[in-house]
Amino acid sequence: MEPIASAVVDKLKSYAKSGEDFFTSLSRRRHGPNSRNPIEILKRLQREAFSDLMKLRDRQDKVERVLTIYKTSKAGPFQEDRTHVQGEVESVGTLLFTDDLDQQNLDSVSRAGIRTGTISRLVFGATVREKDSLEAEFSTSLVRDGYDGDNLRILLELSKVRYTANMADWFSMIAIPMGGRCKDVAVYAGPSSSQEKGLTDYSSYGPPLLHQPSGSGIGLTVTKSNAIASIAQFVAEYPATIRFSHCLSTFGQIVCQLSRSTRLSLFGLNQVVKSSQRISPQNLVTSVGLLRRGRPALEPSAPPLEPNDVVEESSIISTRHIALMVESELDESTTIRGWAQLKDSNPRDIWWAVTMSDSAEGGEMGWGLCLGGVIQGATNCDHFQVEAFLKFNLGRRFTLQPGIVCLLDGNNQTPAFVLRSTWSL
Image 1 (cartoon, rainbow, N blue to C red):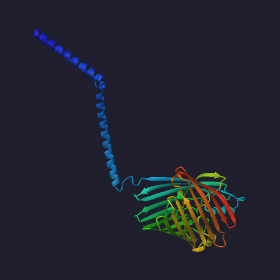
Image 2 (image 1 turned 60 degrees about the vertical axis):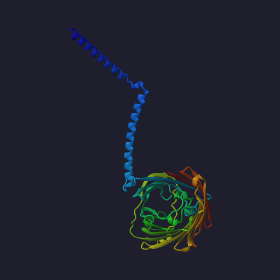
Image 3 (image 1 turned 30 degrees about the vertical axis):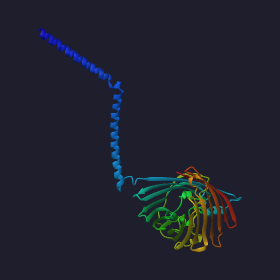
Image 4 (image 1 turned 135 degrees about the vertical axis):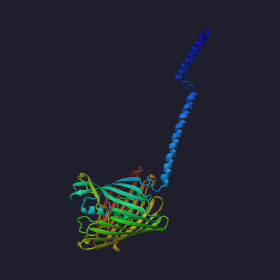
């Protein structure tokens, strides 16, 4: 019996020892040996961080492979999904130094091409088929209700739609369904239009025929060596108050690069006015406001049809304009430009201007000086004007241009102070 009893006691002792070891191991796991060992903690954090980095690298490799496929593919989703938005708010005010303000003074301001009022533009542009571009321009203008101008409406309109297709490095095509002007297909040089503008149309880019509304059109541009040629066909509809329904305009331009900083441009515009069915689309116009007691903005000056041109509804009138312009860059920011425009090759019917300006690059103060005028036969008074202005770039988006314009129409002399401000969005 004693051997059996001793075996039972040994067995119980072994069970007790095993239980003690079991509870001791549980106690050690509860307190955690790693919690008391910083080295073990750092090793564990290193393993976890390495695992996270490997996962991030794997995801980065997948994204880079997708981008590589899109860049090498011609039909990538990022190539036709870029829309650029540009905005501009332009305000022009005029103070006439005269004792009596009459209609003759207002006509002088209109002939000088001073566009008083506030105009805002918003241009949406998108890239299509890698090299092509599509632009839609919205603008606001003031329209007078009634002859006395008591009520002014602010109109928001889709003023222009233009599509440019670059077929090759030397050939491009431009389609303008609405709101086209000759300047939209003309070849430009130098700074952008907002930087190039002066206080009047004479100190802007070029001859008046470039700024004349021409309606819908299509144009082609060909580049060869040091010469560029462009041609366009427009059709414009007249308002219901004019007996002629529409006008067909053919525009052409040849540009020759005489030297590195000098170029010569020849413009031609042939207008044929007919009394047939209206065919061009109307602008999309929406009224967004109403003002009281104000003055309307003057329309942009352009060589219009003469009053005696409109005679009978069945007649056809053809008018031809030819312009020559020479421009030269004296340095990186100073430009001198001169142009002359003739109507029907008549030397007694000429628009002309000579402009010298500094574009004020790098935030410096700029300036401009312009001499211009109109000669319209022996029966009409000649127009002559002198313009001088300063240009202050207040930041990257705001420009302030104060200046003096002296207008001479026959015996009538009208000096004026003009202030133009431009805010780009």
